[in-house]
Length: 96
Image (cartoon, helix red, strand yellow):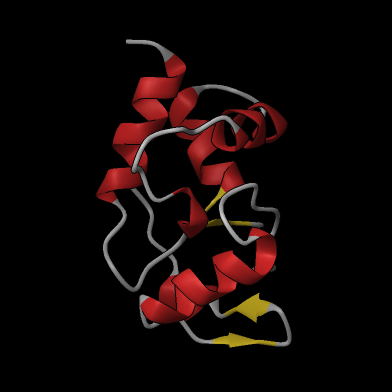
C-alpha cells in the first residue's frame, strides 16, 4: 500500500472530537513529520486531514478550503475547543 493511501486510512480512523499530530502520523507511516505534512497537503480525498495538528497543540497548516480559518471551523464543528490557537492534547489527542 502506498503512503498516501495508508495516510488516508489513518485519517479516517480519527474519531469525531479528536485530533492527532503530524508526528504521530509520520511514525505510523515511517516518514519524517515534514513528509507527512507534504502528503497531507496533497490529500484530495474526503479523509479528514484538518484533524492533524502540531505536536505542541498548535493548529498547524491547512491547504483545504478556507485555509486555517476553515480548519478551525471544522475542528470546532467536531466539538474541539481551541484556545489561543491551541488545542488541549490531554483532552483531544487520539493515538492509533
